[in-house]
Length: 75
Image (cartoon, rainbow, N blue to C red; front, side, top):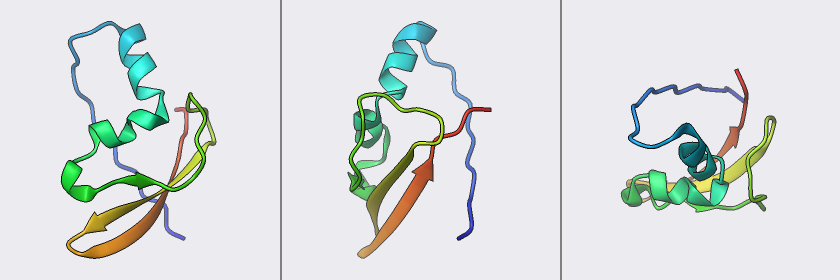
């Protein structure tokens, strides 16, 4: 299986602590994903992400249902 990496940087007008609390909660993934992709998390997820965690999910891309996995890593 090929592994792809997408990295982006963005300035956010809030404290690092508040931003971390939001982004480290995997249940917020649908809130930061385009609604047109219809993201659906298919794996059980804890309240907080951790290094090495694998999240499986489906997204709908132009009438095709695609299953994906993401591995959380720490650089």
